[in-house]
Length: 227
Length: 227
DNA sequence: CGTCTCATTGACACCCTTCAAACGAAGTGG
DNA sequence: CCACTTCGTTTGAAGGGTGTCAATGAGACG
Image (cartoon, rainbow over all chains, first blue to last red; front, side, top):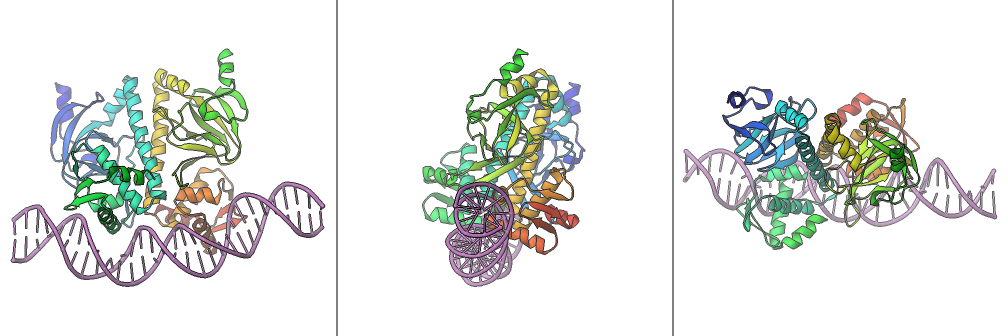
């Protein structure tokens, strides 16, 4: 199919400068055509204020979207896990930067294709809108967390959220570093670390090797996370 | 017109329990039919987790949308000024509570009407989506503010934003109280107040009577707000 | 075993919060 | 016209939670 071939051709757009290797072309669950792209750990996927030429669904790995101030202060807006979509825009440019947290494969959809699919099928348009609204809802919860919650509440909320989102057995491997956690939670790396050991001392969680996490008293943790 | 009459009938939905007096029926700039409703200062427009039966455009006055924790800590998500739309959802319930900041008139649109208009006209659907995306962009800027900015930067950002959004001569009347500002900025009322007097001492702003504001050095303020 | 990266821990400083009181403007009644 | 109240704002003093700076610890890898 020539269409598929055209889509699978190497990419040179501003958002995908440093693409490793375009993989097979396919269709998203939304029915939108696109192609897989692999990104190495910490590689930029797109930058803030770059033209929003692509939106992506995470296939494997994880992605952080964030904003950064001139002096380096960084705020992570969201971590996108497999199945999540990021980079949707209606305006011209991206409002956030996106980077691979770990080695990651995304399914990239061209803006043109998305717009066309939305215009052609009201149901696709409605789903894209619903995706955006879901991002907004999470963002509003995040505002409450950053504006009004203590370090302890923030960290617990994050851990509970991760366990909810990542299908796992009793033990979970945190997909992000302490620095990423800190920048997501509006804290410093030291405060995150101290809070985690404090939670462990209180037998609420168990940590192994920094990344391996077990919730030992999930009910108590959910209570702290809720408020 | 019977349709208009039906729309203008008094409302008893959970979101509009304490409605003062339904006013004239009309159409929104989006082309969606609806009706005007007046709310007194501090009156609830809808509550978090209530069925999202209405979305509203502010006609006059101002609206705050917010979340609240069990112990009373409150985070204001956004202030909606005349022309702004709030309360749009694709899910069943509202994710935020909404209250009138001052005596306010809103143009209320039934969820049914919105959904129908979006389904019938792709351009309306696209505009609703764009509205949601705009909320999301502002929310993401807000995250950066709450997570990473100092009290001084937060207050200045707020003031500059207000001056941008409110058409006014040299002097502006702040539409919200110090408590609202504090809950929007993730600070206490005292910190907001102290920061404002500090800005005044540095000749960056001038305050009169608590609410009347003049930016005396807008360029400098924009610099502080930007980072 | 050395190096690198990331996480933990400690000591101290500071920004913002907390608690409290005073202030000011607007409205009410004597 | 002047107490008096009320509500919102400002100011002050003190304390605490989190940040900063610095050192140590722990895996991963060559």
